[in-house]
Image 1 (tube, rainbow, N blue to C red):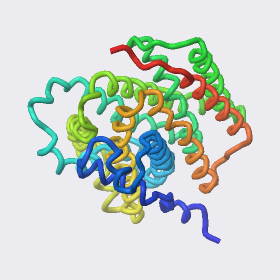
Image 2 (cartoon, one colour; image 1 turned 135 degrees about the horizontal axis):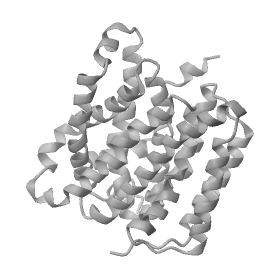
Image 3 (cartoon, rainbow, N blue to C red; image 1 turned 45 degrees about the vertical axis):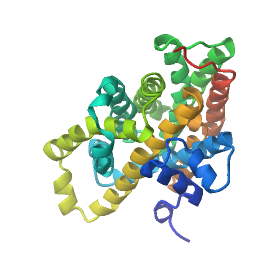
Length: 338
């Protein structure tokens, strides 16, 4: 029988359908994934949106264990910087096609998407995993839709209903419950490092609303390239100028194995998935898109169990409560005013 560690070499079942969707965005054959649907004789746009949602859940749900494997060798800061810098390098060939002066008017949206949707959360998530398990981090990530609605109402003039507010409250109760699961001596640790995840979900929620409000008319690849262009160089400067990355790469025998996990995380979990996520936001609404977090904790829990993490029955109880809150948040939600 293979050990859990060996099982973690990314045996996530990315389907042929998923890669068709990714390929359509890379080639920029059409900014709408209905192109892929036409190619395989599927014309139901709603169905396509749900397939994209599931594909993103598999990708992002696996990202927490990939971060953990990256930190077998590298520090949390090095893993975060590598993730952003590698994603930037991967997208850099597209700069000449997608960067032009006419888009400078959207620079605030690009910066918001890059900093709040990628840079800051990358560092917060890896920092969190120095103190709590990857599965708990993935479960707490489910707070994103709740903050999406809350911040949408407070900052972006979104309209809401009582049922949505009840959903927010239920979700927060579930999050507190998750943080309190475990031994009493672990609770302070959970609260401290769990707070980093909460901050990351707030950043994600701000980014989702910014994309919907300011970048709705910008091609998803173009938006991703611009966002990475703003933050990628800074991540590279930090990585090579202020960390021990190069020393570890040359001296640690496991350095390239961990680096491979981070490359997968950067290419699939950041560069490609961000493009697809932006398509989903434009084709649906901010709340539907952020509801990818319904499925992320399931994938994260699966990897946590395979890696031998302490997953208890109460974890499932509280995550169900959070997801109930997410369901109510999305119930008859109204899009932001324009």
